[in-house]
Image (cartoon, rainbow, N blue to C red; front, side, top):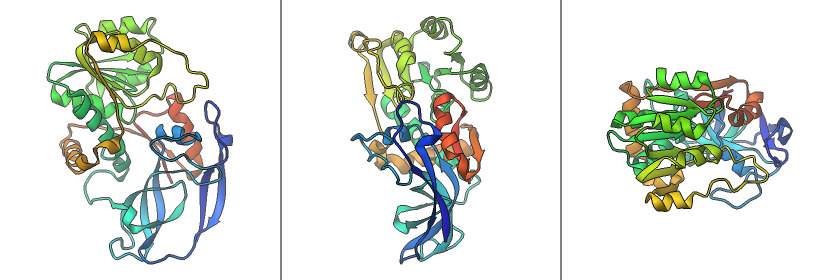
Length: 332
């Protein structure tokens, strides 16, 4: 079987470019017992992948130069030597950026037969949904009537965080990077207010105006100057879930920024970074809740889907320039 794959050609310095990726034609070997041949349908691009492009020890192994990039993929079983995954089964797995691939059956999860779109299983009922759920529910522990602020609010995780907070009964303010996204947050997704940080003359003042009672919970997807501005408006006993720092991932020389510890100390703030894998034992319960909310129409979602395998590098780079609303992915 002939396939095409994308490898990491070189490690990015600063913002990734298309030169950091290379396309290869490969011939896949014969299937062995308990293996399946998969045809990729949707391939996810996610901000955390930028960290894996560095030759640096972290919570997950770095990508290797000249080796395929891997991530969440929804695929169709084309051939099978596993009784558990017959031909025609749709699956989710951590798979290479490839048109076709071979995987061990034990590493795959079946896509259940529901009315939820297949693509949602790498979005709202996949890793982004679980990330939003655990960061908000387990760390921020929002209460009805509290004010929740979400940065990167129009992204794959932020959209879900804000809506769950609304289900709980919170007042929700989203921070995003365009007027169009701000209008989408308040119009379609029920946020009480949205701030375009790119056009706000003074972001701290804009946050103060949008949050007259202060901030009880902050879900941080971006870090940098936005988080510096938010931290100045936290209430006593506020909770901060640190999910991502996308504003800093491509920085070559990090500035000190605001000294955060005085705010944490003076306001008795709980600030915790987390990985979705921290909560593996709760995955089934959380997924059931997310699916119930989606099917009941309480959680809405949107996706940015680029068509064509060759557009994967473009899609990935677009994450860092705000090209996506909701989950970014490529339809192969």
